[in-house]
Image (cartoon, rainbow, N blue to C red; front, side):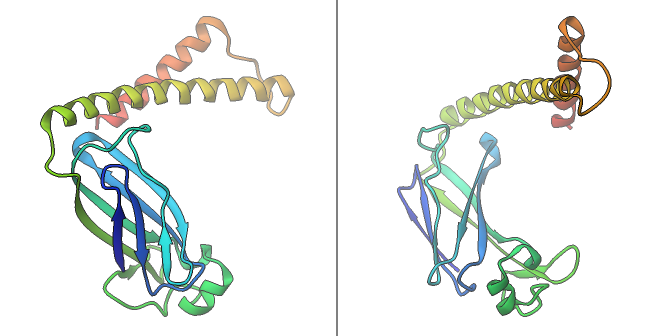
Length: 187
């Protein structure tokens, strides 16, 4: 596995691999210091893959050291032509990036770290971390609201029995959901 990076602060990852054509891969880019994590799916074509462009909300990434992980899902989830090469459990895969899978067989998992765009900037990192916390809280409220609204829609359509949760009770449910999610994310 070789990884080449185009445009360091809005990177596109290009890889060369000996995994079979058609292999479905996931590239995860992360930097815990700023609570950054993003993923891209791609497939191997002619021994190569290319990701979409990574960014931080349509903005360049903060400079610093990032973890790059390219993984392949379990063999059973791969296309049949890939399974024919690697085995239905990945048992024919070998190499330093092949590890035992939890349910048996083998999986591919490449992990590396790369400096993107120079040295980290403490001020930019503090701003990015604060924005990540704000974004997470907004997502939690949206997610909890969607859950309550989904149940209400299911009640209205007759898919489930019961009564809709409306008004102050709805707001209380959303508040309880976000409070629980916030407490779990802080553990």
